[in-house]
Length: 351
Image 1 (cartoon, rainbow, N blue to C red):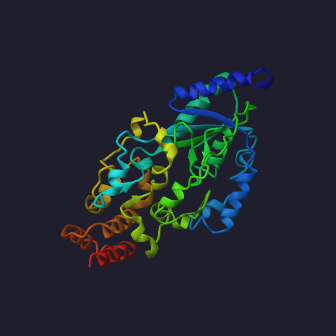
Image 2: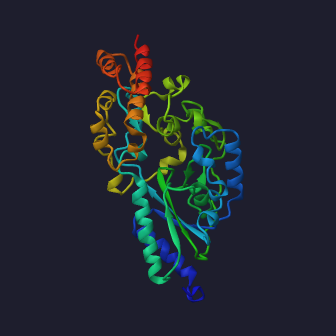
């Protein structure tokens, strides 16, 4: 590829247009310099806030230096895609303690493959006009600091809850990154607009946001119900309520989400009635039911055992009823010690 013959300003404009045509709500370009993000990551790791997510420290500086992860990377094309389905109903579901609350990002099809596929299609379009260029697509699938890169690209700013916020679209969106060896013109970095607001800090059920922009994952319900594979600490179980896969509380209260847009992607619409699932019904799923109903879903990654663990906690926090006690007792002899432990705790809550 003869880079001297390429009009990179025009190419950048084309990339943004192609990205929007592929379903991304915004496309922007960042460089690979993340010294502040690297410093904050190291401080976060030093405090042990990563819990059992040892992979967060596994790759050293490759996580914060894209050119070390993928040699010759010069710029990163960052994209975002809205995922909030029209039938979100998060407040109603959270208020109904007999229902299972699933983080809204996980109601539909797993976004990882969808976004990587779209990024690959975008790369093919770029390759048609700049043959032989080098690239690699990512969607939460490698040691990539997507949020700091997106902030540099101007897709939003990292809020006090550590999620990315866009001033006219809120925070209900996925991110993707396309590493390239192209010297594309850069977009303007976004600045924080959180101001004195502390709504996300105040609402967190487990007080996991220990300070503005600092999240102790060991206290976070998303970590406890998704990343943690062992026993959920007893001190947090009652605080989890009916949240059986992830948590959206900090996003629900964010004032910027009054501007959030509903997704146009059919793949992100709820599947298998996960947005209206009864705790008892989910708890009564067999392993075959779980495999079938989570096929192509992000939920599949926690496995059936953790699914039952989480549902048991939800049932322990639900209003007492004969049906709930019966459901819990049906798993008292489950072969998994992890499941039995959480079932026994749940039954204690109904005495």
